[in-house]
Amino acid sequence: METARGLAAAIRRREVSAAEVVEAHLERIAARNPALNAIVTLDPEGALRAAAAADAALAAGRETGPLHGLPIAVKDLEDTAGMRTTYGSPLHRDHVPEADTLIVARLRAAGAIVIGKTNVPEFGAGSQTFNPVFGATRNPYDPARTPGGSSGGAAVAVAAGMLPFADGSDLGGSLRNPASFCNVVGLRPSPGRIPVVPSESAWSPLSVLGPIARDVADAALLLRALAGPDPRAPLSITEPLAEGLDADPAGLRVAWSRNLGDLPVEPEVTAVLDAQRATFERMGCLVEELEPDLGDPDEAFEVLRALSFAQKYGPLLDGGGFKETIVWNTRVGLALTGERIGRAIGLQSEAFDRMRALLERYDALALPACQVAPFGVEEEWVREIAGVPMGSYLEWMRACSRISVTAHPALSVPAGFTAAGLPVGLQLVGRHRDEAGLLRLAAAFEAATGFGSRRP
Image 1 (tube, rainbow, N blue to C red):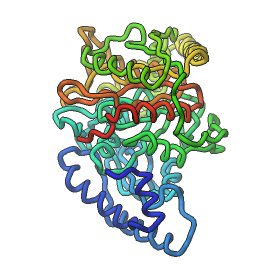
Image 2 (image 1 turned 180 degrees about the vertical axis):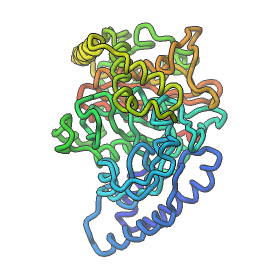
Image 3 (image 1 turned 30 degrees about the vertical axis):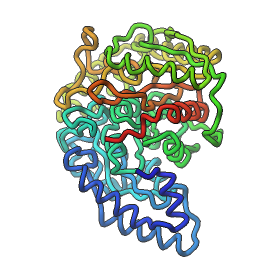
Image 4 (image 1 turned 90 degrees about the vertical axis):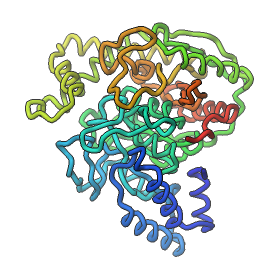
């Protein structure tokens, strides 16, 4: 499969037209999407009109953006002007927004062609992509299993070649979890790297936007097109991303965590990741086992998440129409006291500072992206890991959600396969606002292993 950056360059050189690229992806969607259900709204006619306009602009010598002519389907949580946006909810089954969110506007400004929407769980809640409007999305490596979520439709579409790359969002792991399950790269940037506009919680660093791609360089391409400050987003990062991915990793210090100290991890996942410690050593990195103490990030995450649910869904709860996990999480939020909220904010600050201090001594933290391999598509959430029962739909994602609390950039990069042929991702965490350094290390690991080239 051609890379996104290769396609973009070929379009710029006029070796291939945007129309041909869009047509090829539409053909791939027609072949693969019926079995996988990754793209839930599609506008082929509009996509081909936009592609023709892109080709005309290039022929006329007009200035073009870095994504010129590349097709993308937008996560169905992002408002897309004139295109159905449901949030995976029957309450919004026929909703057609009048305006784009900022990330969609930036995609268009960079030259990308919006051809449709990718599937999500209802309101993006939970790392399993299914909803009452469109049903379940299936893992391209085993359609009987889930691709994870909430950016599950995006990850599947990219892995199966239906899109060159995709956008996603991440609160508790929604970029990293499906990337791990689908053998692609999913980057959770530092809060503010890609501003979230509009937002009900403009000062919260928990929910971020980021790229999904088949390799690190394509993820970097999409990140650069979407990054940059916006006056409506107070956490906006004004410093530009450093350029380039080529760097010798020799001498970098990597802290190697098998379970973040106390998390249950399926033995088959641990076995795959343990084998990759030697890869970093062959790359010349200094690898040391370390189980970081982040304080109490679970309390921080679960309280602040519940608070956000109370804010978003509390006023609507009596009207019904929500799945049970959303109702439960919202009621937990409505019952919070000021004391618990204040404690959670303090714990979040502590987790940030502990990770900051750790990454003064190390260049990156390596750990599982997911504690389990892809599970059955009919299973809403994991009830048990390595014999340890999970108390809620949130607990099985703690390898990601604990990192979210620290507000440091993190990504999942393909790291191998279980004996059953299911993908396993390695999570790498970088220094605050140093996405460039994190991407360089991930690119070196990717080049040393080649796992990402194994397509479904």
